[in-house]
Amino acid sequence: MKKIYFGLLLGICFSVSAQNRFFYEYKFISDSTDKADVKKEMMLLDIDKSGSKYYSQDKFIADSISKADLEKQLKQSPNNINISRREKPGQVSYKVTKQYPEFKTYLFTGISSDSYKIEEDQKPEWKILPDKQKIGEYNAQKAITNFGGREWTAWFSTDLPFQDGPYKFYGLPGLIVKIEDKTGSHSMTLVGNKTIVIPSEKETELPQGVQIYGMGGKDIEISEKQFKKVWKAYVNDPTKNMREMMMKNSDTNRVVFKTMSANGKEISDPNQVFREMEKNVKESLKKNNNRIEPDLYK
Image (cartoon, rainbow, N blue to C red; front, top):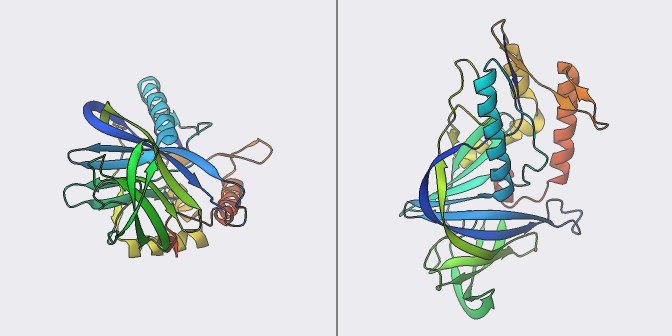
């Protein structure tokens, strides 16, 4: 009988290619009722001739460790896989890719046990202003835009000949070296860069009949309108997908969910697990009320 313990979303990588890597310090206030709690995450923007990818450094490291652990388990005991959460999986779970030369932009994010690939149907419309200032070591010029339900001020530098930037932002005559929304809730500032050789993505092959959240399957491609509908359904019933997965259990293929209580005790009873998960999700949603792109979650 195959037992699968669900946990961290994993990223799988192999083979190599040369890219430009830009490091952005992302500061954000996830709870609008607690503006003193400013979180930080180091984000990476990797650029090559085909496009770019923007993602969390901490999450990338945690996923790489989990991937190595998974491959070890697959070799030793492929019918009993235990994927555990890491201590520091990163605070930012999404990633954004852009395909050159059209700058076709996709947001990759998860809801419950599903992973989604959402095509952006709007491009940032910029107004370039004459204001100039030094951002770090770069000469930068000011530009403003309304995007995703926020007013943004960006600083771009023609010293860096890339019409790209963090998150979904692009389309200025140089790389965006800093961008911040009007409320000061979200800001991304370039703090370093280097040319690197990094792995390209490759999925780990799982045994037949085994599925693990974030692995062994394609992202579900949907529009922003469809994503909003899925999100609303999730908010109303956070554990629906997991309950449906357990209903498909059989003697040869069985999904098992476990979680930890507030006092650190392991919970394995399905009904109790789902109650605890639903409670945790609702508490998390209440605190995470100030998203970078609020229009997407309306």
